[in-house]
Image (tube, rainbow, N blue to C red; front, side):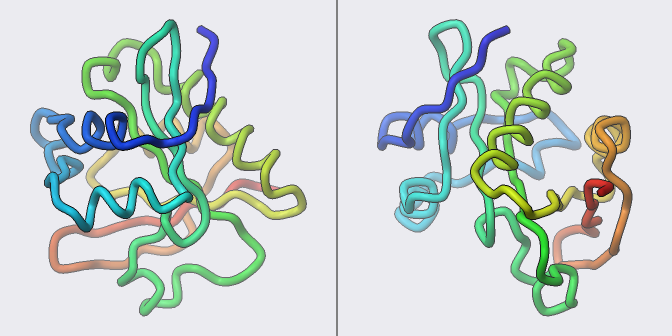
Length: 156
């Protein structure tokens, strides 16, 4: 599958905000609001397309961090954080590995010299398994009012 990055536009952002995941992944469902739309259009998110349609998104830096994790000291310097999401209609079909590999490579290319770090909800065993297989290891656990999270760092 060939992936391509495109700038985030209003129509794409609205489509992403409308994605609905099944339990327990419904945790990742978004609300369509002015605030969430402005976040996606703020310049840190990019759309990922494949085979002529929206496949997912990625972001890097503070946009990929959970704010409470900053308060917990989960984000020391020397890393670039990566965040991503996949169209729920594409999940569970073996698309995770190629999508994540593409996203991680693009963020690494855009931020040379920094190690990759990501944050994942602790219940998301499917993603954690993928990240481990991709060379990431658990670094820190922290909690918010809604979930427990794990930061994972790419080995050197």
